[in-house]
Length: 353
Length: 161
Image (cartoon, rainbow over all chains, first blue to last red; front, side):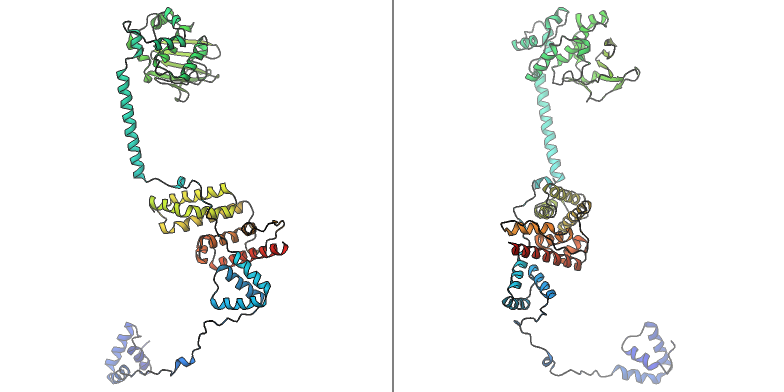
């Protein structure tokens, strides 16, 4: 709005009380420069005296607070309910309490309700505790790292000690092959327990079992196994032939025994493995886990051999675990030997690479 | 929230949380599961939840799980309905704690949970509102109704006996 003589006074009031915008202040300044007679009015406004007018005896108007005065409530049901709620919530003020006390004196039914209202406050049963609280807790990653480092170090130490122990013990296989070494009584006994060593010996197999790794369970399993009058179709093909730790020689023994019992094998090959056992290097090779492979093939699909997980066929140094279902043919390769069986024809085949 | 603070919150709040869940559900196994789930969620969100907000986070999680469960079981009553419970077979021996528990079980889920948060954990109306997602006035109304229902139950029981 343009500043004129008609509205300059209103602008000047705002100007002196700092209520004008910057733009309006500039406009007022410009107007005063152009009309210097208004400067006097500005001076008057700036130096306007401030009057301090105070109402006398203000305190006389105030009411005195009576601390113990009961609050007057309407004695109706809603008010009672509200007060009972405050009681149970523990939010009653002194004045309200006084009112309630007065009501209780004259109304016994209300007094009982007050008593019950106090009882409605629930109290937690401190004996109820969360079971297995430690299960909820977490372990600091750094602590876990320390744990794993310690555990790994312990495992390595254990592994090294086992290796050292093995190296200090002569190989039973070598010991058996070396005629100059005398086998201990225990080795002889366990050997006798197990299976037809003599039968094998007749055919030229000169193997023995290492006793230390045989526990009672293994013995039982081996005995059961040896009592089966090993037949090719019952040995490697049956489900879960052996699920125990076996001595190295026993793994080898199964292979050899299977070889002996198979009617399908070539005599020359049999001689190669049994009658004229290869030097120790070959036999050692038989027990190398890396050289064992096992596979299954679906029925009627001869070209589709599958390598199965070690859950199904796990042949390692000390374990021979074979799980084969009746609808699947089975194949196993041990070292240079490949053994396979057709479930339905009951024919087994052993071949050599 | 770091691991130490998390474990401290287990020590501080697991029991209270369990009591709250147990009283709301009346099922030990489910109460245990809810508490375990709540702590699992807290652990997953530990980077986002401040240590001093852990308790509120835990109770909020368990509260919503209880309400969800109740909805599934269709046990929850009308939101605005005020329920004055009726008892049918009062015990011969008046055991206040036992009777209070019985009365508590008759309350609608919203009323029961808010009154448990109020009495067991001492939360203010505003804090209960934050946990439950209700307004402060709604919380007050639910607690008012719950108290009235509990009192009515006890008075009626006493008169009968």
